[in-house]
Image (cartoon, rainbow, N blue to C red; front, side, top):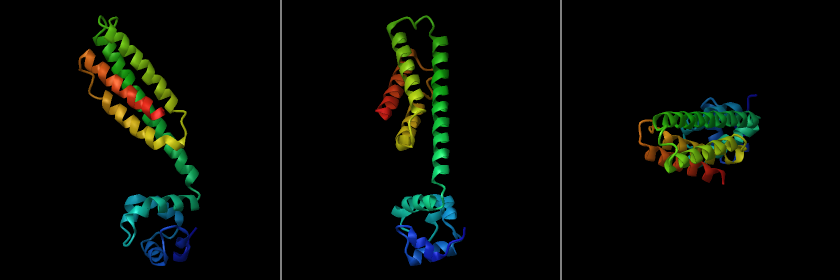
Length: 174
């Protein structure tokens, strides 16, 4: 549905002049503003960069795209969780193969315990709603970094990496 420049004044942070500039830039509907994203709106002269996120959110709601966006975010979160989960499981399997005789010792038992706790926390992350998704996304990114590159590390380093990843994930769920 095509709006006029005056209709854009419904968005907080958009006045008559900025509404006209948005319309002249080719954004003739709330849906187009929402699809433009942050980068697209930064190109519009005179827009306050502090208000861009708010304008995008309002335009999304007015265009009726809020629910679709939430579903896409949830799908991205599930994809990230499964990606990190796969990394953790692959690293655990390679570690078990490399250090089979040492796994019965104290360090090996702790490694198994950490692995179990990480897997449980990742399973819980799949059930968490949209409210904490940014926090969980950051935690998943950090946990992924902690376990990346540990395939050739010693058992102690692998254990430390798992421990750090476990703490990051559990802290995000708290």
